[in-house]
Length: 405
Image 1: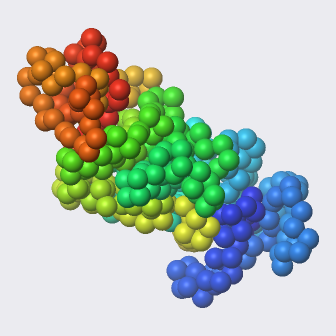
Image 2 (image 1 turned 30 degrees about the vertical axis):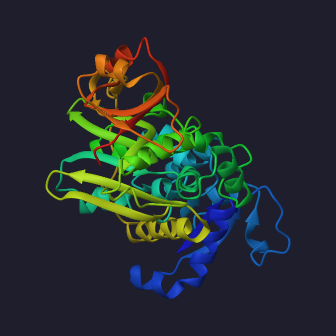
């Protein structure tokens, strides 16, 4: 079967490599059908690449080639990836993607386009990189009502927090190390402010509950306010800080979805996920908690997920997979600060006696070198809005959600 790849960056070049190096195993999965890369779309020049003869700068050479049946979109961004993907689907070609931003913004429309033209739009690599999560949720957990999802969805932020926790590095120094090691971009905003994790939350929520969730519906808080003081206090409570994307089922017409730093206690499966690794914990009513763990990015891990989708598409050329979700609504994602109760970690400039007058029950935390006018504590369960009302007259330094995963 002839296939094409759009975008020859880290992931795209990995896709070509995996297709060629795993020909035998791919043929076993497709009943003898081999994948053959016929075209590679990229505007850059690759004169010394062994695949130089396959390159094109003209998208129409892929669109109008009747032999090409499956296309991998590894371009990133919304445009022109959206335009290209939609045209390919309309032309009767299946498309697989690693593009989380595109799926989060335009996934519903592209899934509907694929359905209308009897082809497939698949995106296993868009959430967990090399971690299988889309297919297991769609198939293996299909008999469950999903009650909630919590995930460490960004390797850059997890690396930074791990360095702060294990090595006592400041946020600024850990970020620089992440950039030096190639884990963080020169502009790390999408990672450290939670936007990357937000896009993945949208995809997971849409798949889990059947209604499209858009990034502007998911509130994001990044890790830039986390300090070594917070790390030390939470360590005394036998916990760590992770940037989590969290999704909670409310009812048929509403969910909660948000991205924020969270206190994870050491007994959780998520607490021991360190470095650039990711993990996604799914809570089903029948199966309980299941955790998917592995490399959330990287050339070959992500490429393996893309090629797996290409294999799946090759196996379904005569029929479309039943896969996707429907429309959402503006009020589908509730205001979690108003509706969801949970404990909170708080650090403030105050005396313990002041805190005890405001809160009925708190657990005070300690750290080495704690100033006499600083307190840190974990509250009982309440909404975030209620917490902030209680703290209105207190000089609060930081507030972090405490997760129950």
